[in-house]
Image (tube, rainbow, N blue to C red; front, side):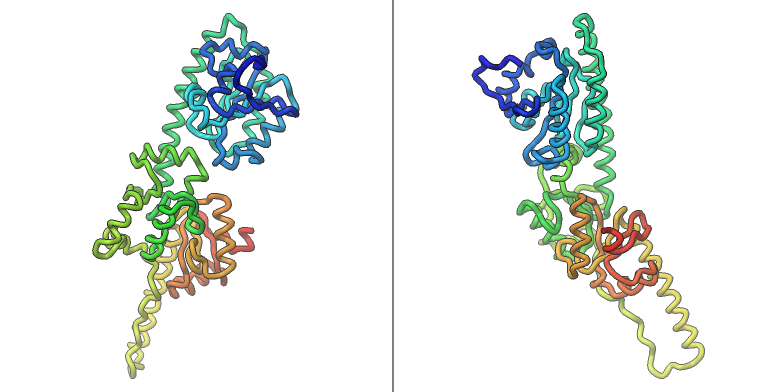
Length: 387
């Protein structure tokens, strides 16, 4: 790459063939913004453009995507690697329709796109597409125009397909729990003041809810804004329908009955121990005993039905002491940390607030301790199993 006479100086790692593109000026200096695809052919090299962001840990320095790219660049100098700071190079990002990080473009010598990766966590596909790129025959000049048009058509089709897939995923996420909040961070560790206040409102309402950390997936973070036509976070959904953000939650909280009454969330309130019908003093007749036995059977059947509903309320359901933002024992705290570390979307039930559930679930699941984790209605086990 001939850049010695450029005014803009780019950073190139001496031990690898990676060129860091910190802004659009660097991209211009590297001829990455040239309209003619032949600009890529000056060194007769294939190339890989790796778009990343400082806030996205997997693509940042030391993250899995960055590690793979760095390793591949050290092994092969026949492919030129560019590491592009996506948000600081908007022109280059728009040119290649980059809307999420990480995005990786695998380019032939004429600049046509052989493969691309848009978001996700599939690091293995980077190596697979890299191997495919190395084996692709360099395009001849006579086929450049046709290849470029085909690539653009393929990109348009890929974009449409990706949008449809994302909308399906967003619909699934927003309805994955009856009460679902999308926030910055987790209930245990909110990463902005608005998210912290929203969690406090839900917690003070004593309702069980699921959540999604938008920092864990930029595709969801950006896509949900369009999907819901709501540009900010946090966002609260009830039964798959958008309620709004923090301001709406505050307004509803000030109305009679608060969030629970205004959003009709009574069935999701973590209730105290169920009232137990007292046995009238002196009624020791056989008919009274039979009636009491019948009541117990009815109560047991009713409790089992309730437990079945609870364990299937969310795809991943945690029964714990306390709530995710305030665990009441070390075991519950550890399992919350494990789930949060994997960015898992889950719902939780505080067994300390309902003695019937606390005791009944032990018999129902044949598991004597807490926490208990269920996936799709089936018991996984406790903390030791999850570890």
